Length: 162
Image (tube, rainbow, N blue to C red):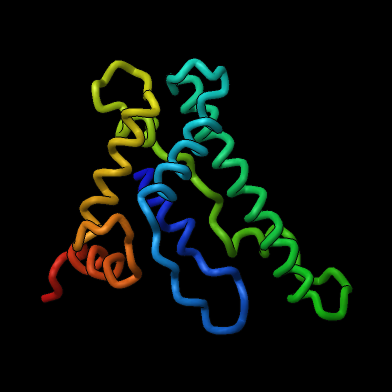
């Protein structure tokens, strides 16, 4: 999952009205740097492991960040709906329009990346998993993932249409 998050975050276009730019190729080094940065954020005591408490804190922070983005979107949308600024659109009605983010059951990041199932994740475990995903996507094995390789990997991962 971490390679997906790293790769997708690198590909995410900036929110604009214009057509999104073409995604740039992604190198193994960029994936490794992204994995290390995320791992370092989660390994708050810097012992080289992400344990259950650190993984939970990371999940909690992610949910809090999603809630903060949700609140900002709600404020912006409310301001747009209340064009005459008389406050006639009730906040309760407006809040019901967007669902609240839900924390995942369990600790998916820890469970997926704890390959030896010892209850904590090392940088080596998470890097190996991310680079395995990179290698699966890098079809010509040149150390660079192109937008075409990403599209091909996405198509391959989708179930066939009936």
